[in-house]
Structures are given as C-alpha cells and as structure tokens.
Image 1 (cartoon, rainbow, N blue to C red):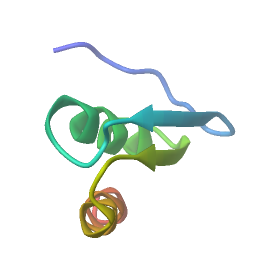
Image 2: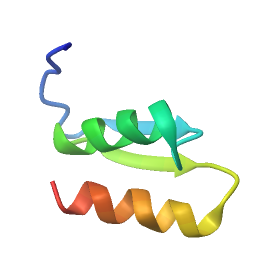
Image 3: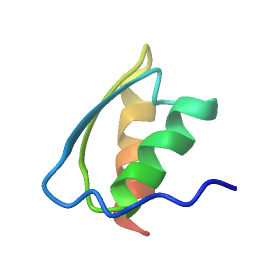
Image 4: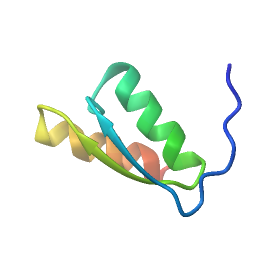
Length: 56
C-alpha cells in the first residue's frame, strides 16, 4: 500500500467519491489532513463519505 504524506493545508477535489475507489481516495486524503470536496451522482452517499472521513 502506498504511504501518503501529510496534506495539511492542501485542497483536493475527488470525482466519483460516493463509492468504490473514489470514496477510498477521498477518505485517505481526509486522513492526511487535506480539505476534501467530493462529487458523485448520489447525494445521500456524499453524506456517507463525509461521515467516514470524520470518523478517521
């Protein structure tokens, strides 16, 4: 698995972040300290991704 550096102060936009690889990437970026904006087709799944980021 790839080790990510700290991303404090960085901003990320992740398309397709409501499921699959996009969701995993959004969560991992959030764990490294980045401010993450997500897009996807299902609004309620945005909330799920957001909650997952906050719990890590």
